Length: 115
Length: 112
Figure 1 (cartoon, rainbow over the protein chains, first blue to last red):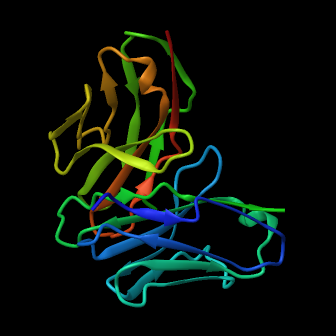
Figure 2 (spheres, chains in turn cyan, red; figure 1 turned 30 degrees about the horizontal axis):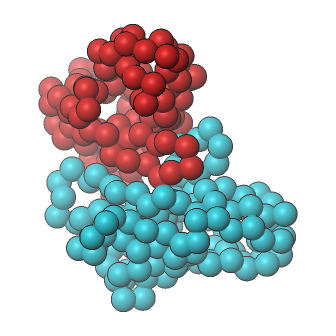
C-alpha cells in the first residue's frame, strides 16, 4: 500500500455547481478524516468516520457539505452549490483505531477553486 | 477550549544554522504531540511524535521533547539544509478527543 490517495488533485468549478472528491485511505486504517486548509492556516477539521460510521462533524460544516464512507473503505466528500468561499485545499487523513498515539497519515489533497 | 500555538513565521535561516520552532498547547487530558511537515502543493507528512511526558521524538535530525510542566513541544534541528524549507505544523491528538488540533503552521525558509 502506497499511502492515502485523493482524486482529483485539482478541481476548478463555477459557483453554484456541485463537486465530489474521493479519498482512498491506507487499507488497514479504520478511521478517516476530512479537513479543509486555506492559505497560511493549519488543517481545519470537517468530519471523521470510524469504519462506515460518521462519528463527528464540525459545527462549522455547512449543510451543503456531505461525506460518506459506504463500505468503510474509500470516502467521498460532496459540496453542493459551491461558493467562492469554498475555495481551499481539502485534505483526507487516515489512522488506526488501535494506535495509541493517534497519528494520522495524510493524502496529497484536492485543491478546489470556485470561480 | 484546547489549542495549539506556534511561533509565527516565516523563519529565515542560512544553511547549517540552528533551528527552533516553538509550540505550546492547552489540553485537559494527556495528549500525544506531533510535528508534521508540508512541502508546497503536498499534504502533511508526519515528522515526529511523542506520546507521554519527557518523551523525545526524533527523525531526520529533527527533535522535540514533550514537556508537561511547560506544556511545550518545541521543534529543533542542529543544522538545517535548503531541503528543509517547508511549513511545519505542531499538533496534538488524543487526551480524550479523537479530533486532532493543529497549530497554524510556521514557514521555514533556508538559504544556501
